[in-house]
Image (cartoon, rainbow, N blue to C red; front, side):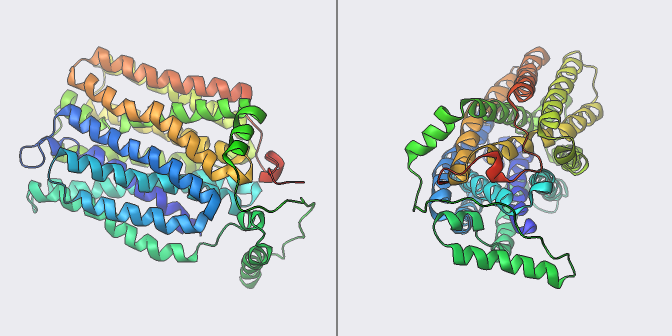
Length: 450
């Protein structure tokens, strides 16, 4: 179950890495001959698609269930990423990247809600962060794949970039098989009055644990009486997020916007920084993405358990604040031309060792602090707003800063990213919710509770 859910982020990591690794290659006359601004625009197109897909499919996830949307969004991703490999000009590439983003954006709402609704409360934070960290396994695979395709010399550059996008489609086919084993959320089934089906899923999980020699699970404590209905009106979404919990809404916005701008500004344009300021050959860019991916993956592995032991508020505040301060220091050293290309890679890896947990905790927070009936849609709303404000404009902005060939201009761009993370830290410190080791229903009572 964890494998089938977590592999979604592997796909997203693969897609983002492919875009970053191929950014300079796509500028070659032998490929699509993009300009720097067009490269930034394609990254923004992917994010615009992700925003649109998240909102639409997130709304459907709460209406139709978590599992039904798995195949729909994954199917869209498969078709779109395969079509990207056959792009013939700038506009076709933009269209296919937007559709790919829509598929991945839709996955975010369904997967994050399913993770938190299926994982025990005592380890929910750790598991959520570790699953989100699989994004960086995809990033590493994307780097290795593009490094071979672009730098081995065995495949002409005119075709190698097309084969690179084919990697994602192949992995998507594997996920189709894995997804068959993922059950529907019993919590969602109860909201729709399908208690017998929900009971069967829970019983099968309990029986499988006992058959493997696990302990006999204790009886649950307490109960909630709910009124069954077939959907949640949008007016309830507005009331729950704006009128009933405005502070939680502000918290979600601060965390999502900060991490979205931070990651997208740096990651989508890292390849351009390497080629423009350090003279790295475009074919060698994927090699420098590997330490970045490693830092991002091992960060949640090492720090994830602290979100359940020390608590959400302490760890989210710390990871956001430290990430911002580290980036600010790195930006100063970059401006002063005091970092070699290897030094820059080390700094970025260290920064994202901390920032990876911060970014994942934003999704964890939004999923935990809003009611069950609107969980998926709430995730998609905050993801979309954060990505639109912090992500869509960031790659285009940084592409323009890189084109200016000014380290000072780059410093101010990095400083803006660092500032947003520090704002997120302060907001968490003031408004954070202590959700560690508590049931989702105790953190936020269902709207249908009576």
